[in-house]
Image 1: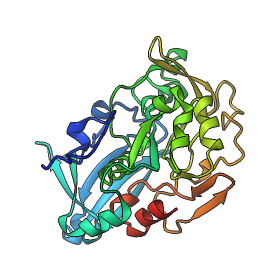
Image 2: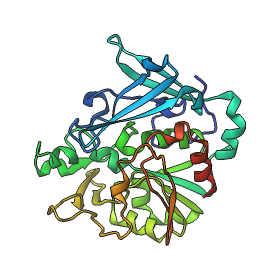
Image 3: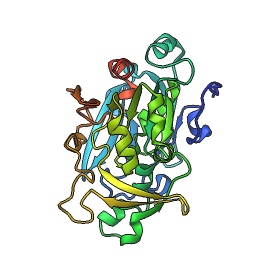
Length: 306
């Protein structure tokens, strides 16, 4: 596979992203997420649709115990996607690479080199929260308060709950990126960017929340962002749930009491009536675009033009 020479990826494992590789874990072990978590086991299966003679690719997720499927015509895919199976014929990982014939489109919706005025914030705390022995094991009463203080992840692990597909695609399109940690340590970093893109950053610190909500041009690309407050301890390299998501008392939903919380929209993953809603400091998408960036030209155009 071809290495993208001009890409700068400080956190995300270069073997995964620079060559455009998404490692899709089937089950909890490889990805490290509880099968009983809010979004289940991320992507339980990624298979070609045998009922349509291999013309479709299906993305199947388990949300709150319910199976939801997004079926995409292979001819509509904006990237080359190759599924590799293990010896038991289970999907093991997926290669995502640019199509040479779409080079002009990539220039239209992306950047030739790392973007200078636009940045997205990778939800590293959310990635950690969904991990094994994490917040969702606590919510599901599989462990006690010890599961509410977790190590800060040191590398990218692709998972549904942490916007894996959007992260891959925006990186391939040369969108600049920072992590929760960089933003928490230096909230003023957002001031250098004209536009800030927030993914499924469900768990953020108060410093992050204040920096994001005070920026004048934010694209909230996923519902359920900024839903719960965490606190960092960089001496121990940990983060701890402080408030939100039914903690410390069940009646608490959004940990910041944020009036623009739109978490009720996160279970619409088909996005058939996708639109942006304007709020005082930007725009919010009204559905969860789990795989939209793989096939929807208008979606990628809207991100660039917003």
